Amino acid sequence: MTNTPVITLKNFFEQAREGTLTAVRCDKCGALAMPPKEFCPTCQQRAWTPVPLAGDGTIASYTIIRVAPARFAAEPPYAIAVVALREGVSLIGRVVDIPLDALAVGRPVRFRPIVRDNETTVGFGPA
Amino acid sequence: MRRVAVIGVGVTKFGKHERSSAELFAEAARDALADADIGPGAVQALYYGNVVGGETEKQLHMGPQAASVLGIPTIPTTRFETACASSHAAFRHAVMEIAAGVSDVVLVGGAERVLTVPTAESTEYFAYASDATWEQPLGLTFPGVFALVARAHMTKYGTTEEQMAAVAVKNHRHGVLNPKAQFQKEITVEQVLKSAYVADPLKLYDCCPFTDGGAAVVLASEEIARRHPRAVWVLASAAASDSMLMQEKKDLARVPTTERAAAAAYRQAGVGPADVDVVELHDCFTIAEIVATEGLGLFEPGTGGFAAEKGWTSLGGKLPVNPSGGLKSKGHPIGATGAAQIAEITTQLRGEAGPRQVEGARIGLAHTLGGNLATVLVSVFGRD
Image (cartoon, rainbow over all chains, first blue to last red):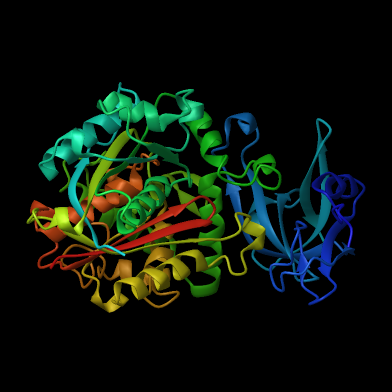
């Protein structure tokens, strides 16, 4: 066991910017987590291994934001979805390049990074 | 552990105010002390709730400030922040202080002032209760959080926008009967359905308003409460938490935080959902009321919308929910909301709620939810 984190948030978003999503898998019980944590919520061990994810999944739920926080005031309407990824963890992100009226629970989507002002956020586009 | 009772309650008018949150709290506390028929000198501690005062009033360290404005600056005091459940979390800790024998009389309450800033700004501050790394940078709003729940509930159970509208209509009908409510006007299902989308599928009239206001309750040990014939017993006060992240919810159509807090509260109180006569619960959005009634075990998962549409949760129905008008109509000064819900349940169990009285109410329940379904407080109250 090492004292350094398996993956930090900074690492995660650096890798996401290059197109790769990284989760962590518990070597003791097999649970998958994202974001990473110190201890496994399932078995309370600390035995994580980073694992890359394929990036594809389906929309578990979504919304279209029409009244935005002040710093996003010029952007509505925009869509945000919780996406159930193929490996069994979920990820929340902006949905881009899919018409708002074509959004549906169960629709397949694929991860893509959104980089703005040097900040990387999670996005999903057509599968 | 000693028994604890509510011996006094006070709530300001909810709406827009030109006074600081500390002043609003002081007004509510003054009324609560008068209701308890005790002086401020009897208060041994203050447990205080506030959420966005750092942003809207540029004010931290609000416990001593509130105590000072009230005129009792030297008592121990702490501010609690659990997003919209703040003063209910404060309440639970105050109950434990008295139950443990540390104090005999404790003041609990909270206040919020948000109508000082424009909607886009308050929308941003409320979003601070979602995750700053994973959620805020996406532009996720608080209505957006509950829209994700609503869409999942509609998909899994077939809940409709009409059923959600029925919750808003019912709570406005109740709010007409509450002189402290921000909105004392009835609305129709058509008005809800025609209102503009804020975060699909939630529309403006599915959402509670931004509100200024304060609320306070006086808690006392059994020995003192015995001298107060209108005392209402705290039968249970329980809390539960969960991951804040919407992506870590295993089922977005359910709120396990509510289920766990309710199970603990029922166990403490020795009652079950069928014993409850009146409920004040956290209807920050219409879907929030539906999932709360299900999580509290009042209705089966997936049937909360049906129950609202059938009128079962209306005054005069089989289980009246939010006779005060709820957050939707009474208003939601977030730091004060939990204390205001407890004040309403106390008033109901005393039989003093006037035209909105739930006849013969003996057991009441207050449910308050904070942030991304990540904090829930449930307390149960009863009369002898």
